[in-house]
Each structure stands twice: as structure tokens, then as C-alpha cells.
Length: 505
Image (cartoon, rainbow, N blue to C red; front, side, top):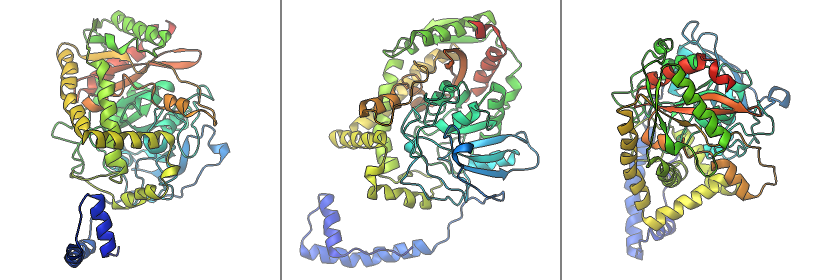
């Protein structure tokens, strides 16, 4: 694209915003120096950039009509077929619409981004296709993923297929609804505060937030580098483990990944049983101010069911867990404002694959800021205010507190295989009406996160597993393991899933 050159007035305006005061002589010298800057950027602009190749041919895509989109869960429908063979052969998948799918529109729940078409497939997309899956389309999601409800997406609320009129959860709302309704075999979601586990809980699914860095986030619109996760949402534990086998492992492009991010044979542990495993029921995961008694009761009953399977189950206190959601909140509020919004989603100061086309498309939000969702606008205002008020010190302290929080969980996990607590303190809630007061819009977006959000900042793998229902609304328990020990979660969850006893209690 053409390289712009500022005039003296523009230089003065930018300098003033930075608190720099320039004389007329300085302005002239700055303007002349910009000739060298422009030359540098002209050379940069002429250099070729190699992006990951698109391996599989594209098919026609379409926007579904109301008849095809009963739950308002689809954004775009496709039929992109992968390899003729593989462990996911015959499986149909929906992608959360923050995941790049080449030559197919992507809006990430946002009217501002609508019309953007990425030119690459995210790494996870290529891996699904390599494993033989068929991409059935893109799932509608919350507006830039800033909601745990299913009511903020620009295309309207996503309905819970198990109880229309109720939330499907978020922000991977459409992903959960499509799997729960049986329209796809599985879906991918992204999780920065609970956005895989929350909709999986509300819709009665198995949802995994993997260890931070196990699954590459390359080609997915970020929120905050230190909390970005992508993972599978399925109807069974076995399917979840199978999908993780296909998408896990380093891609050489995502700096979130390290040497430990190696895939394992997760399906190999599914028939081992759980006898002798050690589970710590975390006291502080129960009894939140908004906890529903039947949720806590069903999760404790699930722990009792594990005891009957020969699992050693103890109650353990982790006091710092109660602070975890507040540490997360400060980190995500300031971090997402600086990276996702002011930094045009990819931000700066990290090594990895950037998508300049996505950054340019996203940058248009400044021209249409009033069109952003209320949850996003409030988060931005709060994040900017706190960054200015503290000079970044609050964000820095939150990041520093992640280490003792992680250690608090790790100290218990040194003696136990898995932590256990309710995934959410509540069941699915009614969708806010169109004329709902902002207080209710905000409440429905963030009220369910106290147990899920801490593990986004500590990076532990966390698996949501259905463990009961009340009035047709599912209840889930969350299992948490040491880093890169997803196999423990699947081993325990598979044994629990096979046991019919918990279903009657």
C-alpha cells in the first residue's frame, strides 16, 4: 500500500498527543527526516511475505437463512473437505468465527469486522482438514468474544437448543449450540475467561481449555497473548480426546508454544478406568455469592460417584482461588484494551505470525466505536482508565500475582491428579430482552466466570464435563490437571461418563 508522509500540522498534532512540544524549526527538521522514514517503509512494503499455504480447495459458502439457522448459531455455512483419510474422517466441524478460514468471511461477532475475508487457514484448520474432517461452517460468537453470555453478537442472540429463550453461553456460543443440536459432530472454540467451558456447561457438552500453548493459536484473532486458548467442544469425552490429538503440538509460528507443547495419544487412556486416581475437591470453588444450591449439590454428588469408582476424593482448601477471578479481571480488562483494541488485535512486541489484513480490517473500529457492543465499550473504557490511573502498574501486579496463583494450584496438584469444582456457579439463564437495562446486559455477560477465569491466566488444562441437570438445564463439573496432563482429565472423565450411577442422582 502507498506509504503516507505527514505534513507539519500532523507532526505537531501527534507530538502534542505524546506531550512533546515542537518549535517551528523542529517541525521543519522532523518533516525533512520523514523522507528517510518513508524510504524505509517503501522498501519494507516492497518485500514479499510468505504466509502459510492453503492446502485444500475452497467450496462455495453461503449465509444461512432462518430455516437453516434455527438457533442463530451459524454465521457462514461451507462444505470444505479435508484429506480422504484420517482420524477425523467423516466428522463435520464448526469453527468459532474468530478462526481464520481462507476465502470465507469472518466477523468475530462484530459489525465492525463484517466483510473481512482472511487469506489463510489457521493452523488448527489445516490440522483438522489433514485429519479428514469437513469444515461445515463458521459459528456465530459474541462481539469480539467479550461476553460469557450469548446475547452480544452483532447477528443477534444465540439460542440454547436445550431450552430456547435461554443463553447458550459464550463467547463460543454458536459453537456450543451447533454441537448440542447435533448439526455438527464437534466444534472449536476459543477460551480467554471460560469461553469454551461456559457454553459447554450451559449446553451439556464436554469442553476442553487445553494447557496454554499446547494448541497453536496461529491465525486466530487474539484477545490477550497471555490468556489465548483454542480447544474442542464435543458431545463425548472420546471425541474430545480424538480432536485434541489432531490439533495439538507446535507449529513453529506461535510463541505461546514451547518445548513441552507435544501432543500425546489422549485416546489411549480412555479405557484405563479411574480407580486409584486422587481428586481434590476445591472448597473455594463452591458457595460463591451467586452459586445455585442445586449446582453445588450435583457437583458434590459427582464427586461421590467418583468415590464409588474407586477414586480417592478429598476436600482441599485453596484460599487464593477466590482471588483468581479478580487477578484475571484486571489482566484481561487492561490487556485486551491495549492489545486487541488499541493494538488492532495482534498488538506489538511478540514473535509470531501476524495477519496485516486482519489488523487493517479491525482498525476500522475507531471510525465506528459507537457500534461496538456495550460489554466491549465498557471493558475498553475501564481498561484505558485503569491503565492511565496506574501507569500500567495494576496490569503488571496482576501478571506478577499469576505466579503465586499458579503455585497454589500446583502445590495441591503435587499430591493429587486432578482438582474438581463446579464449572460455573449457575445454570443457563434467560436471554436478556432487547430492551434490557445495561445492568442486566453486563450481569448476563460476566456473572458465571469465577471458577473458569483463573485457569486462563495460570494456563492449567481444564475440562468441563456434564454431571447432571435441573429443569432441563445442564450442570457441569470442571476438572483441572497439571500443565500438559490432559490425559489425566480424559482418563477420569471417561470413567465418570461411562458410569450410569451419577445420572440418577
